[in-house]
Image (cartoon, rainbow, N blue to C red; front, side):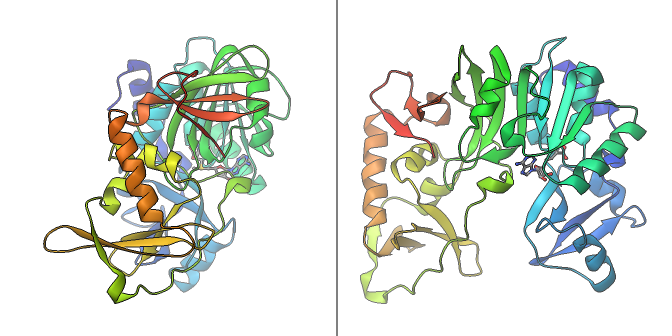
Length: 361
Ligand SMILES: C[S@@+](CC[C@H](N)C(=O)[O-])C[C@H]1O[C@@H](n2cnc3c(N)ncnc32)[C@H](O)[C@@H]1O
């Protein structure tokens, strides 16, 4: 999975368990509290899983879950899947001597890996949540790492306003904050995940002169929770489908929604604002748009069927997009790129000057 020996060495050396004294694990639709005193703790710490450390921005929920049993909540801080951390760290292309800013300190584990690779004096990290930032700093110190830690809104960069060679955001963004471009030296890289209802994933931007940056969507995929101010409102519930309105379709919901299908990124560009919504208990998804349009599909013995409602026929738009995608040679995510400057944030196909362009955000 890792290609760079320096990162392999960092993962082998930095003790993940020191950064995860307690966390939540899924318990049906709720979350149970686990800590060091539980026999499963160490195996879970060294598993491949994401480990959720905070729900609903609430510092007290872990104690409540411990005392009263599993709680409901939405993850708001975690130690990400080590495989995705490894991808992001490698894609940052750090060189000896680089100054690195991490946005989203969380547990402090990723900051510790950065300190191990780059040296503590080269690393700064910021988290918006004061309790999370303080606990991370304590754990980093006790492991012998001393990055510059701050509490604040990472969308504004690092409070001290210094310049970095690399910025790594371990949360996702709905737009690239221009402050990151201003705090990165020309030629430096920004790696982040995109917070989009469809077509999320990783991007590496190279910063140019002035407030400009350009780069590709990365072939290796990864999804993160969004920065606080970039969270999406919950989708509206869908109305029930009319049994008489189902019609056959050759396109599957999986092709539109699954990141491992090549069409998904193009679908996200052609269907702005459309998002997946859970329907039913069997993990099925439908499409929905804030204007009230929606589409559901189902499998039949011979293929798929679709039913739609609302002001726009979303599935016809998805089918049109699929035809355009085929005509363009079925481009996968890494054929798309992103240009950012103070006027625009624009996705393009193959070339920044391409006539195939779509706005971001
Ligand atoms: C997936 S966690 C980061 C994981 C972390 N790097 C680690 O190794 O444990 C995302 C973090 O982003 C933080 N966050 C959310 N919005 C933020 C913002 N605007 N600025 C800085 N941090 C933010 C959350 O508090 C959360 O701790």
